[in-house]
Length: 91
Image (cartoon, rainbow, N blue to C red; front, side):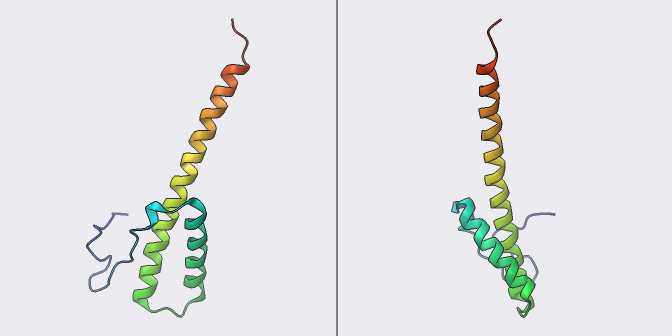
């Protein structure tokens, strides 16, 4: 999937979702809003333009959560590697 420039709508004639604040969110903030966004989409009732904006924001929130989890995974692997090195007797 190709990324759209921030100043271009995803679909001609429709406005894009505002995702400018997503990169500054904590994992918990992004996850909570992502859950709420999915619930709103699943409930239905939103118009096409609102649904597209919710979808775009949800995608950005999911990417933010994934970035946090990737960072946490990398830190855990680093700590495990350090722990394994310190647990091995010197040869």
